[in-house]
Length: 425
Ligand code: MTE
Image 1 (cartoon, rainbow, N blue to C red):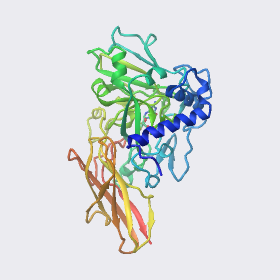
Image 2 (cartoon, rainbow, N blue to C red):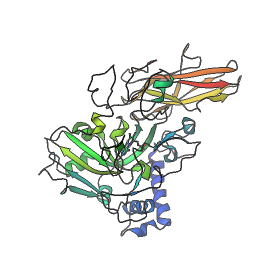
Image 3 (cartoon, rainbow, N blue to C red):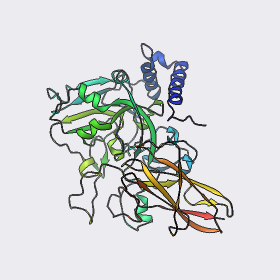
Image 4 (spheres, rainbow, N blue to C red):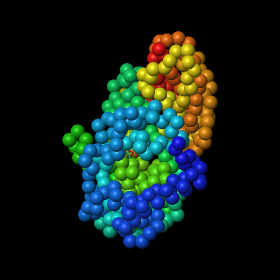
C-alpha cells in the first residue's frame, strides 16, 4: 500500500523515513553538519560518484535514463520512457517515481549537489550582473529558504501525439506517445519568486530563461545548445517552484536532481530539469524551444507558427493495457484519470460502445486543482468481440474533449477523445 501523500502526516512520515534511511546508510558523512539538508547532500553523492564536476559540467550516465525501465511499467522511445497506464491502477493520486515518465532531449546528467550552484544573471536584475559574474545560490542555500509543497502534473506537450496518425490519419513528427507522457507528483521546493527577488529582480524584467545542465541538444546535425525555454516573469512569479523533492524524496537523477523547475499546468518543456542558470532579461527572450518547437505549425496555422504554447489541455485515460483482454459476462470496474491545465475536472463520461452512448463516471479521492481526478465506471461486456472504450472530460472552464482536433505538424496537444481498443473473450 503506498502512502497517501495528500495526507500531511503521511507525507511528513515519508520524509522522515527517507532521512533515517540515508542516515543509516552513512550518507551523512559525506558532508559536514547534519540536518535534512545534509541528508539531501548525501543523496547527491549517492547519485553521483563524487567527480570533479563543476557547476556547469556534469558526468553523463551510461544510458540516456538512469532508473530501471521494466517493460511492465514503461514503453521506451529512444531517450524517453512512457508510463504504461495499466501500471497506475491502484497507485494513488501521485505517480510513484519508479513509473513516472521521463522525457530527455539527450541524457540524464549526474550532478554533484555539493559543487552545484544556481546562477542568476542578466539585465532584469539589479546591477545587471553578467553571465560570468552571476548571483549564486548553493543547494544548501535553497534548502534553507522557506519551502512550499504542491501537487501538480507535468505533461509532455506531445503526449497523445501517436493518435494524430492512428486516429486521424495525419503525419506528425516527434515521439509517438500514447497517453503515458504525464505524471502527478508532490513537489517540494522554494518558490521561484523568492529566489528571483533575493537575486534582485527589477520591475523592468519581462522574461527569464532557465537552462539545464544536460548535454547540448543536436537536432538533425545542428547544435541547438543546452535545453532552455523562455518563461514570462508574470508566470515565474505566480506559482513556479524550484523543486528539490518529489513525493517526499530528493529528486531522482532522471527527474532533475538536484533542482528543477515545476511550472504547474504548463507544457512540460517549461519545467526545466537539472537547472544550472537563469537569465533574467528586460527584453523578450528567444530560444529554439519557443521559436522552432512548442508552437503550432502547419496549413491551419500562421506561417511563422502560433504563439508559444503555454497551458496543457484536457485529457482522459483508462488504466488499462492497450488492446487489453477482458472476460465476457463478468463485471469489470474500468478505472482512469482525467486532467486539465485549466484547473479541476468538472465531469467525466465513459462510452463502452465506441461513442454511441455515454455514462457519467464516478470520480473519487482528492482532486487538487493542478492534478488529475481518478474515476471509475462499471461495465459488464454483453458479448465477446472487439470494443472501443472512450472517456471524455469537461474542466472547470467548460473546456471539453472533442472527437477530433486540428492538425499541427509537430503533433502537440492532442486533446481529442482517445479510442481505447479492448478484446472481450
Ligand atoms: N529539462 C532539461 N534540462 N532537459 C530536457 O530534456 N525535457 C523537458 C522538461 N525539462 C527536458 C527538461 C520536457 S519536454 C518534459 S515533458 C519534462 O522535462 C519531463 O519531465 P520528466 O522527465 O521529469 O518527466
